[in-house]
Length: 116
Length: 116
Image 1: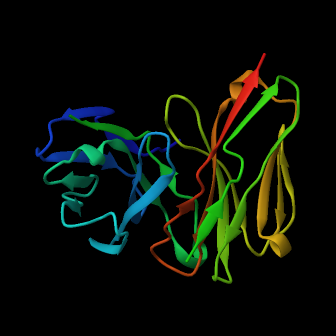
Image 2 (image 1 turned 45 degrees about the horizontal axis):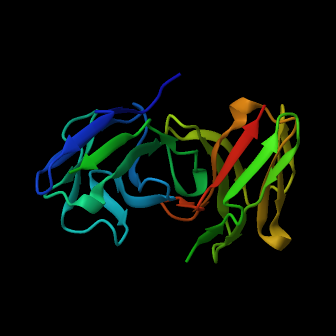
Image 3 (image 1 turned 60 degrees about the horizontal axis):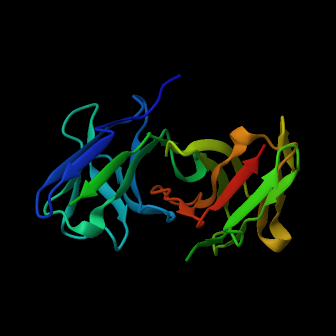
């Protein structure tokens, strides 16, 4: 069964460093998402991406964050200058469609980011 | 604005007991989807069910059952004859079906502990 993959599974970085989290969505999916889960808290929406541009973003997704689909398979989340409060599990998701024909979002296994 | 409330922060039961996890939601959208996800200690999000707001039929899948009541904006999840492997955090989520962004709003989660 196709699945969303994410690398790395765990990333440790120092405050102020840039990190790039990578995701490979399911191949025929068109919509891509990033969510964040601070330890012990709820899963929060960050951004959705379709047709090579951001569809929607939350207030969490400030100028420190960016997303990109650099090729036909990868979908990345970049944090330019990490802060301690960026420590969280980051989930990538993809869906075949959204809106009226919505299919469930398939979530990747997550990347645990630890900022020291 | 969307909101999902899971009033039960933690539930502890003994194996073979039945347990119901509550979910109450708020939305102004006329069409939407409701989801339940399981998050085991390993951290990944496991999709359990999607329910369309048009479809109030209850669903049963093995030991799992879901009770969707639009009149009370609730989408409760029951595990029958619980097992130790059911121990996890369970999230209820809501997503509008009239937007291409299709972002999900999650509840705070209910931590279920099933003791042998």
